[in-house]
Image 1 (spheres, rainbow, N blue to C red):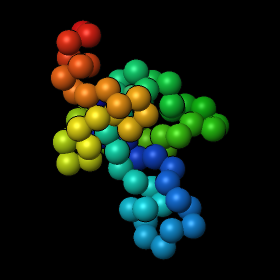
Image 2: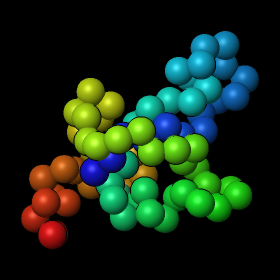
Image 3: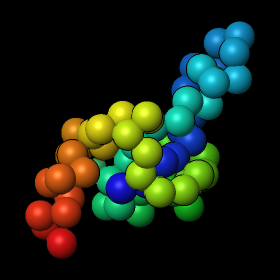
Length: 69
Ligand SMILES: [Zn+2]
C-alpha cells in the first residue's frame, strides 16, 4: 500500500481538493502512474491509514494485500 497524490477536482479552490492524497494498493499504484493520462500525480510514501484504509481504486484493504503476498 502507498500514499499517493491523485488528480482531483481541478476546479476546486483548495489545493488538497485539487490534488487529494489517497491510499492506493501496490497493484493500482503500478497501473496508474507513468502514463500521460495516469490518475496518480506522484507517490508520496508508504501506507498511512489517515488517507484511507482501502485502495482508492479497487477497495482492497491493507490486510487483503498482505494476505496476497
Ligand atoms: Zn487497488
